[in-house]
Image 1 (cartoon, rainbow, N blue to C red):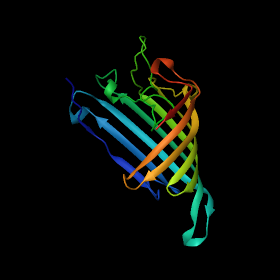
Image 2 (cartoon, rainbow, N blue to C red):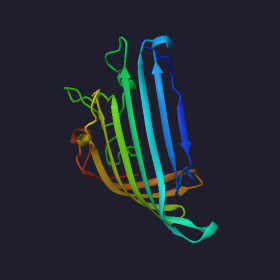
Image 3 (cartoon, one colour):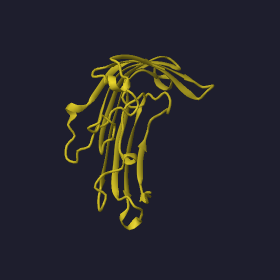
Length: 208
């Protein structure tokens, strides 16, 4: 029933030294999508996304070329927004933003951070903001322990981002990078400051 014709340039600056076990560097990303108008299609909107991630060593063991960071402070911030124009008064749900889950705000259910309608249904937001703070202890390669604090929210408001609506969690994560599988294994305990029982959330939860 609907088609989207769009163009989306992206810009990425990345100096992070390792994609799986990073210890230093930063990554800045930005994208802007324009859909409809002269490009055709039935949906007309513009969408933006901006993010920054930093890994800052706070303790280094060894000297010179053999120096290895043993403690790292890391943070990630992401902001996204979408706005319709022309004859698109309401952004479709598949172009909206949802937060929640182990790669977003740990300790919350997947896609549970979202505005809801009068019937309690998740409808997605036109604005979303998220941050993640970590203090990482590199015990021994490839084992790491991270103390974290996550927060995020999604809104359906054109003019405001009330940070008082942020859903917050905190906890401890245990990570092991397995070269055989080329993926990190993660096990974490999270404390949810404001769980939503209707989505199956609990104040304390474990996840692997």
